[in-house]
Image 1 (cartoon, one colour):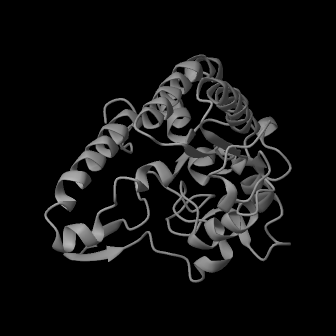
Image 2: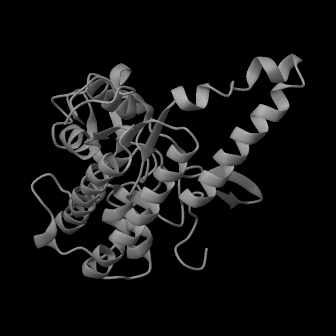
Length: 266
């Protein structure tokens, strides 16, 4: 909290929880009944597709601590070292298929545009903040290199790198053509240029004359909006992204998701 506000569970903790879940599944399934029905069998873990969607929180936490763009770029190798170690740990426990998403265009999030100092010259034709998108691209180039290295280190792994940045950037910059509206506005929020206020986030209430009133409500039609709460995408936007990536056209190697469990020659 003191560093950078609320944060999701870090990747190393997620791995410990995964590891515990794997071990406990084996123990609890032996009890039969509902445990046997609901918990995965041991061999499921080696047949699973392990999906990683990573980068956004790692980058924004640096900006929240007032780091410069160069300072944020400087810690990216360490972030990716930790990422690679977790993949290797999952591999050591039998995981073989990995679907790795890169990070999206940070500079197009209402949260970024509202919270950080951005000069007019740094805004592109679509209203996004260029320096933040550049950092995301830098992270993605290093992530892709890390995936290439992992393929060498883990010869039995099927590693797919998915270019989520390009898909989300296309969605935001061609929103109208694709049936979406106000791509840089949060659907659920309150006030300001981007319908986002860090002190009055989605769901925020105020008390007026002893009565609670919700001020940061959802927009009327979330199905035509891209950004949900300033940070996350709407269900409609995520569905659109999924429809673009499922056939493998944004993947390296360019294979559909149902084939992502096979090791391909590069």
